[in-house]
Every structure is written in structure tokens, then in C-alpha cells.
Image 1 (spheres, helix red, strand yellow):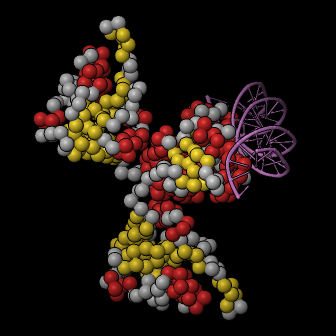
Image 2 (tube, protein in one colour; image 1 turned 120 degrees about the horizontal axis):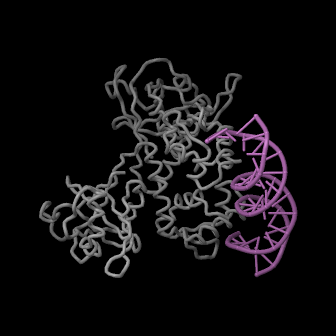
Length: 217
Length: 217
DNA sequence: ATTACTATCGTGCGAGTAC
DNA sequence: TGTACTCGCACGATAGTAA
């Protein structure tokens, strides 16, 4: 059985994205107009796909969406908002933090630096601005559509391979900059921002300051 | 083949809710990861269900969503917004107009009047406020979830049957009132509002004034 | 009461093909 | 090029039932 988004949505409407909720396959099936068995199958499929996690309980079962499941629904939301001209701007709140990001390292490799210059239109300042972001805010990143993400290709240098990364153009205040994400190992709790200038100086930022990152939907 | 919402969404993302767009079943299938034949089947099913209208053209075909199709997607949007705590308030813009509405007639029938009093908690003023609403604004009504609609049952009186109607609690300015919709014959271009008081007097409204109807999402 | 197995059945998918 | 038919096949849905 292929994982069904409609089922996932029904579960979310019952609050399964907030935490565990109690459901029985019987009532779920009834709500969706299918049999108890089919509802059961769909839950098995969703669990196998890693979109929900379950635990059996006395009368029925308790289940919750996983992060992957929530991501998927958020992408759906973004699609529908795009259709109906939802504001189009996604804002992610966070606080300026220090700490050595991986991103910084990338910026000193010509292989990435040159790609940024040609694909984003600016030469990146040599450091990144780290922004600590809470889990639910981070999840909003899923709503950024594929075609407003810019891919940095992998390349070989110094006898090793540097992996793909992804840039998302954003604004911080009035300054145009970009989030840089290593393709693997994403969904950390810190975002790294690259810009043509030193953002801390330009915007007068210090550790702990609250910032809003605005992404073009 | 059962009408597939995912396909409908893909079409809307191509702008098919705005008007006719050119599509070929081949590329559509490729985009959705299914064969050309399956894409074709799905379009046939959507058309049969009255969700899209099509016309064949030189290279491929042109198709557009019908109002029913757009309604369906708007309901989806509303679902996802509810999941992610979208503001929850839907506002519909319109202009005050005169003209004898059907609603007015209903209000003088005790069969409806009493139901309104018991189900909405106020005794309706004997007239309705008519608000002319554009097509796209009217479409937002689809986003009001089933459980915030109040059903007025049909009844017999004077030797005839009075049909069902539906009330949606709303606010006009700070005044609590409700939209009343006959169950059949809906999606006209005029909404009728009932309230405990005479809204024109209470809010100082005259024909042509712009108003915003706020619905609790 | 539940979940979820097995077996059967119906339907959607896709290859080939007509237009 | 296109769309969309028929047909074979496989997957999903349901009924029955065990746990």
C-alpha cells in the first residue's frame, strides 16, 4: 500500500502533529469512507514510510506524525498557498548565535565560492552568520519551493569530495543574503547565512539578538 | 478511475484555476511520476466529475478548473491552514446593496425564526442586510469548515415545504451576526446577513459602502 | 472491544496501439 | 506530435477471521 497523504492529513486534523492522539482504525476508516481494514493498511504503510510513529494502547492505538510526516504536510500547505496567492513570504524567527558552522568552512573553498558568485550574484563574505532557530520555525523551511532553491554542485579538491549544498535566497532586514545548507545533515538547529558583507557589522547584530529571516515563497 | 486531488493540485499549480492552460498528458504524467496513459485517465475522471473543463487544441489540450474544482482545492487549503494554525479568520469583502433577498422572506416564517433563535442565540431582526460579493471573494466561503456551519432544518407550513438553510456565524465590525444561505441555489453573488438588530442603523451603512465580513475559521 | 492477517475481488496502472 | 482506447497484470480494497 502506498503512503496516502489524505490519511496523513486526517491524522493531522486530529492533532497528531502536536503529539500522540488516540485513534481506532474503525472510526478512521469511517471518516475517510473506507473499511476498517483499509484504514489499518494505510497506517501500516505510513508507519513503514516513516511518516508516523505508533504505539498500541488499550482501546485502539496512539499515534503521532514524525518530522518527516509534518514536513510532507507543510509542503502541501505551501503548494495550496501558492495556488491561492498566499502572501508568498515565509518568515523564520531565530536568535543570533556564535559557534563555528560548517558553512564557514565551505566559503573558503573556491569550488563553492565561485558557484555562489555565479549563481547568487554576489561574492560571499568569508564568514557566516549563525542563527539559532527553534524546531517549529525550522520546519517552515520545508515550505520553500524547489525552484527557489539554488543548488551548489559537489566537486573534488585536495583529494576528497565536497558534497552538494543548497542556497535559499532570503532577506535579513533590508539586506539580501542566503541560507546555506549542506545537502546531507540538514535540519540542525542552526541556520547559516551568507551575504556579500559582514552582517554583524552591517546590521549591528550581537549574540542573542532576535532576527527574522524572510524567504520569498 | 476515481478523481484524484493531487492531479487537480498539479493543474492548479500550472494556473488552471485562473483560466485555460496548455497541458499534454505526457508531461503531466512525467511530472507526477506516472505514465502518459494514467495522466490521461485521470484527466478523463476529473472531467467526468465536473472538476475540470477541457478543450482539445493543436499540440495537446487546454484545460481549466471549474468552480467545483476550485472549491475542492480551497477546502484542502483550509484543512492545511487549520492544521498549522493559519490565522483562522477568513475575511470576505463586499459592498452593501439593496434588493430583496430570499433571506428576508425566511425570517418571517416562524419555522426558521425559532430555529435561529435557539441555534444562534439571538432573535433575528426582520430584514436582512444584502452584501454584493465578487466571485473570488464568494469562493472563500468554501473554506468555512463544516462544523462551524449551523443547519436550519426544513419544515412544512402553509401546505408547502420550506427547504433547508445554513447559517454561518460572522462578525461585521464588532457586531456578531450570521450569513444565511438557502441550501439549494447557493453561490449567488449576494450574501444575506441576519443580526439581532438593524445593521444599517447600527453600523451606519448605506448602499455602496464597503464591508468586511469576518468568519471564524 | 480492538489490530491486522489471509484470500478474494475489483480497479487503477501501463504497454501497445488506433486515431 | 498529440489523446485515449483495449487488455493483461498487479496492487489496493474488502470480507472473514485470528489474536
